[in-house]
Length: 70
Image 1 (cartoon, rainbow, N blue to C red):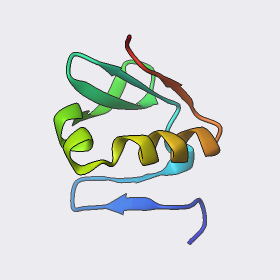
Image 2: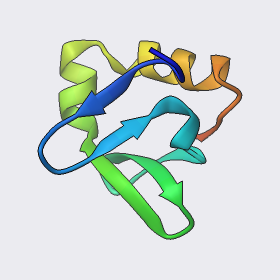
Image 3: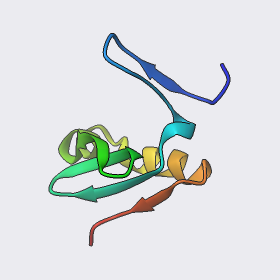
């Protein structure tokens, strides 16, 4: 598959290259696909599953900017 991992559903298809940046805030991990438009994932779900560090690692390996709220 070209472009790396992707998520397919009946609603949308996104590939890693489509992500502009990621940010945390307001209890969400936000994946921005265009300025002002993001898919918001609940931080509690990512933290409880242990997925957050790996997701950040993958995004940074793809050269994406990841801004974590302090």
